[in-house]
Image (spheres, one colour):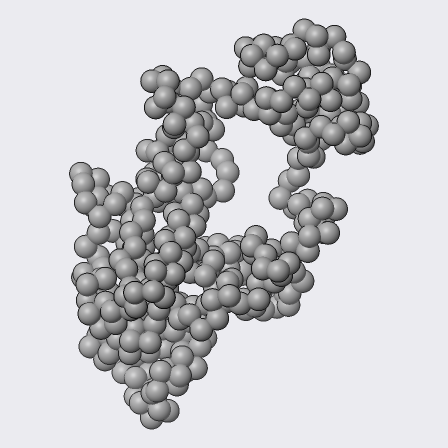
Length: 389
């Protein structure tokens, strides 16, 4: 199910945010061409583990690769030919770099007024921080999001990339909106996304609470309101609960663990909020007495919102994940792994989206150039001059 079939996307990005946005469009069926300069390919290609590049593979599947030095006049002519037939251009660089490279919105939309040009920056196009370098953790800390997941003086942080990925999702949304508008107006848009505002939007719930109350939230406030817990069982395995503020789920839990006294003691959501820490300790002391397999049937039988905590290498084997067909079997030699997750979006029940592995450098250069109308002799000359590779 390729709902964006016929849409041509030029991915000028590197690392995560723009490549991720482009990959999301590719998973919806767009023809995404990753354009890199021969002497400046995506640095994530170099993050190699045991001869494989998992970071590059994670954000660049379903794309074709063209190596062209568009800083040279003949290479820019190739890129301009692509732009004339393209629908979207994506790039993530500091403000001003687009202009230096000759790929800014004003220049490219003068070539193709229908073009949707999407630029992702760290801090926005202007302002006191605009020209600073920025990667994922910068977006997390400035937006306040990291303060909700990390406290104390441990300088280490954990978890996957967040602000880069969220910015990529926001960029994808922005591009889809611009394409939809263009179907009515025939004109493209300049779409701008930055890590900071993407993460502020991501943290909308706690942020609005702060704006309403005028005070910062205590570290565990969101979990206390939600009555969310992560509980260790006797076998060392953990269970996550999220009871929300509804009385029925609290009552269901107390029944599942055979503790009616707790139902009476913390009868209201207000009491459960105020005594979150105490309840957490009580539940921890209960769940540690039995293995996880003891608790799960009881929680399910009593309709308690729960799930077993998985390590990443366990996720694909969960019965529900298997039932959903979330992971697709692929050719390990081509993809670098034997399974890949399909997209999260289904159309009429179809989530199949693992079409092509992340491309090798210049893997599709001849194919793309031929489709653009360049003959074999011209392509050979461009290769000889090292304009394309």
